[in-house]
Image (cartoon, rainbow over all chains, first blue to last red; front, side):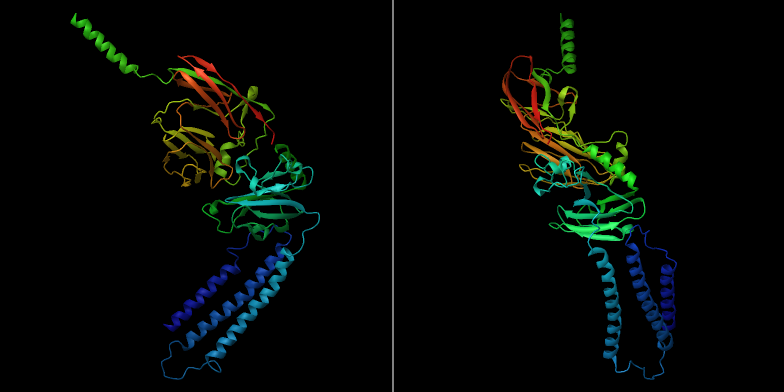
Length: 267
Length: 239
């Protein structure tokens, strides 16, 4: 029975590792300037934890194969010093690995999330609400109108609570439900939430950031490949959470200018 | 003598079954007119339904816009509810249900006018779920989900109220349930025209309500089966 267990354990280890080695369910294409750092960090985590996983499972299989079915009464050897040093040794080993990954990973994360956006970034305001995203671009005046939560009114598409009657800079603000950005230009988002927590997740951008009601959270990225990708909410935000999504369209600078002009005319 | 008498009775009976003796809805006086606006109305915004492809596909030919202020030729104003706000006699609500559709991720019609306690049937005709949410204050507030193919919701409202309606899944969906304590009401069409029929002789106050431009009222006296014209002009503002 012990030998059978060892064989099954080995098969599970080899097969599950093979899926990773063959990249069967791999990361989606990376379309961001910073994505390679995230991918490298993910790979380092995968390789180091994968190596530990394979080694520990195979070691377990070897021990089970060798000692599992022994009934000759001989004393089983234990870890030097007994169980306590063994648990301590394992904890320190695994703990050191996790700490090392955290330190290296934090550096990568901070390099993306804690750095200021490029001063020339395209500024876009994002409003999240049950169960949709809306994006606001400054109009011809280059300035955003002030937001007044009490003026939010979905009936006339005033998702940001603008006051065009009194606030001139709000009149030309462009509000759309699809995030359109020019390729290779830094984009700086300001994330707002109208009601509850939501999240902005674009796997291809290697970005995931929560929205928190009451906070204006900055987030920046540069998209490096044109195409249409999905933005999904990854914080369970209510009944329609499954339906909370939008799209990001990465287009050429010329297409973006034309798109912005067309949308401005519709406001 | 007997045979012609029977013939007369039969004729009368047949005649009565074809045309009921009770007054037809059009009997009585009529108040009709046109709703217009002066000034510059706000620009209606296009609605992008990208996140709901099954709905977006229904509007590729004619993109939909918001419907707060829908205008027509000759400064006509649509979706204005015109009703008798004073002077009317209480009457039982019609047994016929008002139909309200969720179609192409829009509420159709944008404004549903119904009597207090009149049945209201709400349908989901879309290939997506809806969650209709009448934001009632006088009546109980509720919201109900209707997945694809769900049966209609049968409901009614017991108190008069102007109730904004929204969908909890699709923020751009917006409509109104206008619940009135009178059977004498009308909704202005694309040309701004309305017509309230079946009024008994008397003096009434007629009110025109628009969701963005508030209300206007006028006193009107009618007699017999005359038709009186009452026009309402709302003052529109850009913002």
